[in-house]
Length: 102
Image (cartoon, rainbow, N blue to C red; front, side):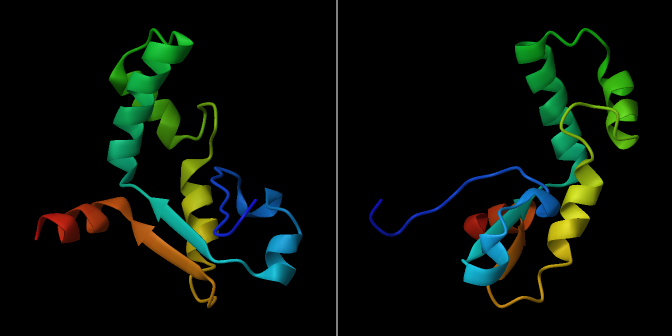
């Protein structure tokens, strides 16, 4: 494909292709407040996967990393630990929203 090329992924750091560490492409990692993620993920699960439990039950299992696509917190920590690299930019979604409304 012609440049600029990009890959959107939800992979954990350990599952990224080996070439990431040698080619060193620019990486932008955006994460959200865990409360927002839990609520959004609950509605997604209820709508698309048929989750029938309550938001409270879902949130408890989300906090314990028992939901599909877990663990969320470890995922954020792994990418945050890469923020010192020149090719990695770690952003919080809420910070981006605040800047756009200022």
